[in-house]
Length: 103
Image 1: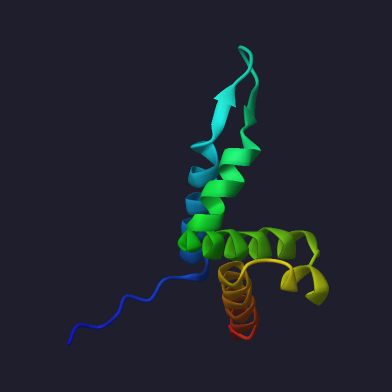
Image 2 (image 1 turned 180 degrees about the vertical axis):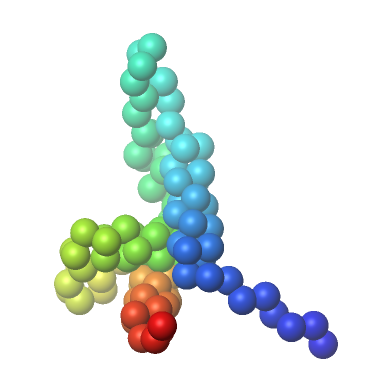
């Protein structure tokens, strides 16, 4: 049996951030020569059907918010979808594990 490839902290982070960003970009439309907007109704409808993007959104939101020192409260996290919560908690585990690395 082949060994599973181990991805670094940064590789995981970049994967989930780019996946979530690419999904949002599908719903972006130009409103002027240098400006754009997102069709939030279509975005929310498509997001509610796509569990893997919900997971990546949770993962990337945790990673981006942790850089700023901001974390969602448990009450706010419970309002999100189950897939979002799984992504959030997975990122939290990876973040804690990466902090315990000794050089």
